[in-house]
Image (tube, rainbow, N blue to C red):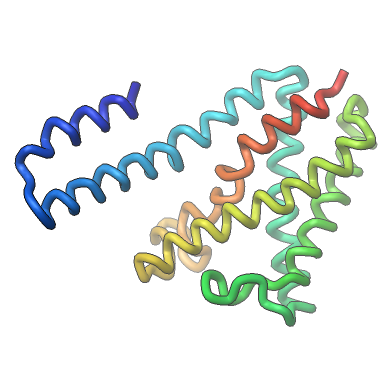
Length: 189
């Protein structure tokens, strides 16, 4: 409904623009579409995750995996990082950090299964953190790409020294649809 509203507004108002102004108007429409997808549509998957069977367990596990991946990647990358993952977009990320993040996610998932979420399958316990260890950094790199494209160091000044507010949730936002799909595949019984 919101998307239809955006599209209708920009189509109706397009008659006012010509040439480069029309191009600018179209780019404004694309910014709105991207903003809607990034800030409204993707986060809405958290509701689906929470409303699934074992929703509270899945939601907590999801956040633990994403955040442990970020922390593990940071510490492993800081200590061992030599080979850069994607220096043009995010100069500090390294392959060693990515491996450290995946290992931290796997450890957290194993601990969570053994202590809290015994219904999680053994296969799911291994596959879910490894898949999210890919989707999370992709979300992080996508947000870094956005900042580089607009020549911004931080997405906001809300959390100084942390790249901005979006940096705390970029991995979460991009990984939510992936996690919902994974819960359907490895749903606990």
